[in-house]
Amino acid sequence: MSITSDLLRGSTDTIILSVLEAGDSYGYAINKAVARATDGRYEMKEATLYTAFKRLEESGSVLSYWGDDGGAGARRRYYRITESGKKVLAVLRQDWEESKKIIDTLTKGKEDGNKDPDLH
Amino acid sequence: MSITSDLLRGSTDTIILSVLEAGDSYGYAINKAVARATDGRYEMKEATLYTAFKRLEESGSVLSYWGDDGGAGARRRYYRITESGKKVLAVLRQDWEESKKIIDTLTKGKEDGNKDPDLH
DNA sequence: CGATATACCTTGACAGGCGAGGTATCTTGT
DNA sequence: ACAAGATACCTCGCCTGTCAAGGTATATCG
Image (cartoon, rainbow over all chains, first blue to last red; front, side, top):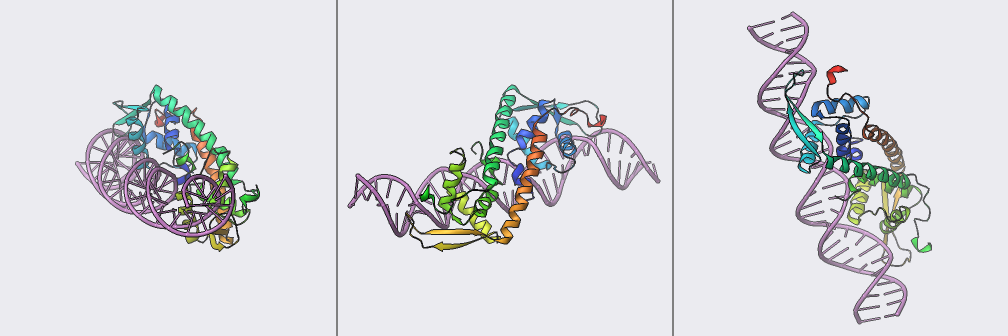
């Protein structure tokens, strides 16, 4: 695994839904938006993206439609977040905040008494 | 998957190494320490723990030895973090800080102009 | 002497990430 | 006119980490 891939795992859906919350978008654009927002430090892989779209659509968090507007390049499949998806997003954000605290707590060190739980 | 399992994924090694940084310990105790430190909000599964130990030992981040001290219960296999492991831990902590920033950035929303990257 | 806590370990299934490969459209340079 | 490159989508199959389930052994306590 690469440096961040496993840490970012589990945030893929949250990221996508967050982008869609601001307005309908499509795969290629989201990919670029993510890369731009992180100054290229993180880039979602296409396979990961499309797998996530499928997952999100099947679970009813997003819906998709073909955009026939004349952009530069091929036809685009746009995604829109559903009401259900907005609720899911809220929960995912809460989960993230919670997880952050947990990991920070467990990762700072300074634990004592690991050796003998009997003493506690 | 449970709520946090996918978000915690990728932090397992960091957590274990952080505990060991404070002193040698063993599986069962680490498990309890983690549960205690998070007030039971998070509990590592045993299978996950022992898989991680194996991984960490094979990569040289920890070493193990049988403790024959008379604790309550069966014999314990203690783990000690190596010098190499300490370096790995430092990197993992940095990665975590970096990932936190990335996810926070991508998750806050407020992105605009998703629709047409051409405009940027 | 059986229940419970301590303590370790393995197997197999599952899910998400992603490398690799494929298809089609549109623009631009020569 | 045509090749190259950007835009844009999608699938297959492997890899890795998680974890439910199951197993073993020892010590303590009622």
